[in-house]
Picture (cartoon, rainbow, N blue to C red):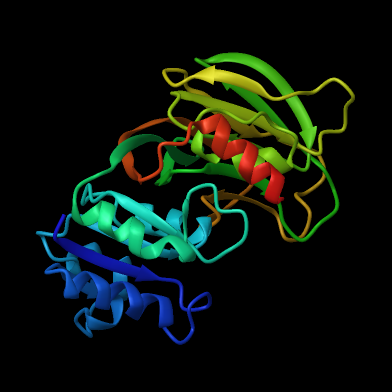
Length: 285
């Protein structure tokens, strides 16, 4: 690889010390490298895929898993693979430590790496017969309450068949990549990120029986906000895609979730197995 773009979370690298260190090293070794500050003023940084040079071969993402998720969505139509430099905390997506920068950059420059294609979700929001919006997600799609302590009821349909009505704070559907995020915090299972499946996990369900359910990537999941006699509490209910895009829902609205036709390429520089990485990360937490 010889053509790179660096995507930096400025809250994690305020003085751009790590960013400049990477840029200087790459350019000193004959590579082309652009950082978000060098993009056209009319663009909106790396969030505007049209501002990314067409010959870009790799996006180096500095920050944490949240920065990786944002970059994945921003560049979803470019098919540019991502490699994460972890400046955050746990960092399941951002595997490179700042202390290993030069070694990792040498691997990129000499093409010593693998690219894992990670499954994504596509979620469409409907109000009645009207489709409101559709967004993609690499980690998860979360339906949850906002500004109220009152639980809500959610009817779950899988392949048009009713599965269950959950009384809970919310419902999340995660990809294998997202299984180590909110899903893990909510008591859901950890899944090999290269698998093709979906995990449905209720958030704080009012029950002693409810557990996560694992579905095939080919299944279709529909989540309906159940109609209720009393009005939806102040603050309402919202669906959130990868912690970013938020859409307010009302009683009767539904979210239909399937696997996306898009994937995200994640560059793997280390030959550690998923279980070895998991053991290391859990030891750090």
